Length: 425
Ligand SMILES: Cc1ncc(COP(=O)(O)O)c(C=O)c1O
Image (cartoon, rainbow, N blue to C red; front, side, top):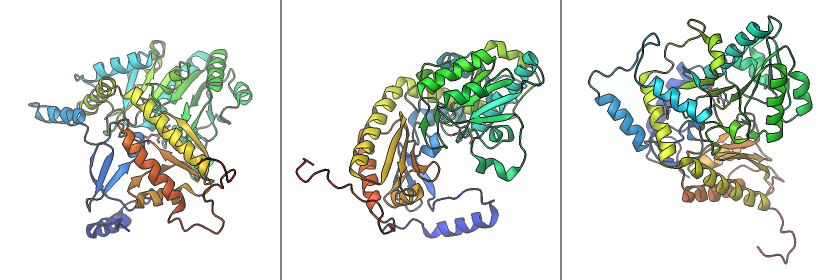
């Protein structure tokens, strides 16, 4: 079996163990370079990247357009790495205009991460509701199982108690309803509601696409209550589902959209998109960010949008996503280890009957990087540039990993028995 560590790796791990807060359960893999959907560790071993830096590396690694934008930025005489938001630089305006056109929302606030984009959305919604409906109308409705980030307000709206509980009392007036429960939603979104926040495809909560009917109900409920519909598209937006906007793909136009992960092709950049009539609630001094929307991330984001458009990556995501899901469903028909395959585009979850981390570890041993979402869901978020051959390679390795090297407990699921001995393979 291939070693997962190089001699230098142990020393680096020792330093991390000694000096980092242990917030992450990391796999023993040190990534040093990459190209397309492949990354290489410090022993030169190649891995197929089916996680894409948790939905960040949508263009894969070392994409020529991104490298060219970086080279241009470095070569520009007197180029600035940072310019405060008290002044102007050439890239924020064009990027805001591009995002506005793609999402049908003309106002943009730039920040550095998904949590910050969500935080901005929730703050704006509360400020607006307080202004229009009064001090009592501050309620936020969110979904059970959702994930919106780690900052206080985003965490308060995250529908997974294990993330919230260690911190005690957080932002008040947040109510949770089950995903796809229209009745519960209609009851919760009332005159005192400032906003409903949802991920059109729940990511960290198990890769669960919301039904179009539920999204339509969300729109109707918000309209009736005078509340804002916030689409958290930090993970599922910007092409991941095969459309720029996962919410609009489902035929529903949100009032605010939070974006981040792939936007600047690997540099930190988040964005909140909203309407003109909301501008009054985010006037000068009301909100801000020192680093948000700096020249280099905005420049890379323009290159990212160019790449997705000129290389026709949205149809590619749809085609490769179908290939991946139908391949996984074919495996599920043969193997009892899989309960369900779900997702949209290249955002795919495989619900397993054993801990997903075990399968993830077996895949890593086979040179494949995959993620998990909760205990039993293997999460796949490969770059949009993944090829048909790379998907086939993943499918073969995945099926092999279901049987091999998992330290399978007695009675662990194996191949499904043939329905009858005479049926064709
Ligand atoms: C849907 C969603 N919202 C918000 C966040 C938080 O983003 P960040 O980690 O960039 O703060 C994430 C991160 O995984 C996410 O998936």
